[in-house]
Amino acid sequence: MRLSGKTAIVTGGASGFGAGIVKKFIAEGATVMIADINGDAAQAMADETGGIACTVDVANSDSVKAMAEAATAKMGHIDILVNNAGITHLPTPMEDVSEDEFDRVLAVNAKSVFLTAKHIVPHMKSRRTGAILNVASTAGVSPRPRLNWYNASKGWMITATKAMAVELAPDGVRVNAINPVAGETPLLKSFMGEDTPEIRAKFISTIPIGRFSTPEDMGNAACFLCSDEASMVTGVAMEVDGGRCI
Image 1 (cartoon, rainbow, N blue to C red):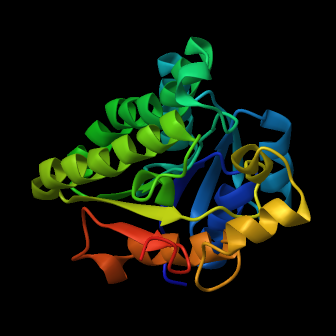
Image 2 (cartoon, one colour; image 1 turned 120 degrees about the vertical axis):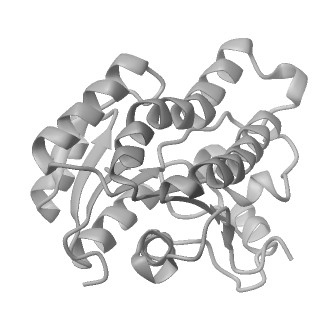
């Protein structure tokens, strides 16, 4: 019960790594708002876990503001924010990625962190406590070819994490990131371009531990970084990647 009495918002919490984080947080005693652009999936996850469903577009300021207001109305306050929602473009030469795809990737992966900070950081500052976790990627540390602008968006998130951490530390708010390697999530096929045994084997061959990340791996790392056990940890981008970035 490492998160007993804590409240949390997990964006993109209805599936993939987000779902793993939601389930771990609830198992450890937190009250969790499952915020997802897929409202039906968020409600299904809430029904399964006992969480609170919220439909949100993390790239839209009014939607994020409404999420923050709903969280404080339903949970009383916000202790933990997990910026997990993310998208990618298909593996493509950088000059062939469309402008619309670029804008969408940066809106969901980068602007969302700005928007949640805008609408939730003042609340955390007023309470002089809080933990923010950004789900970045090994792509921001060791980029894969043809995932060019996705790589860049995750590198932005890592730098944003450090900038947020150093600015918010005096206010009692910690900010960290985790860097997963590719995992069994809805984005996996998009990362690979196509899902075949050969392409899976090629991806796994780059991971020394020899397997993909799992939602449970992310839940465990997120739980530690957002718990009071990590009270001296801020500005860290923890690689949860089986050695991929070594």
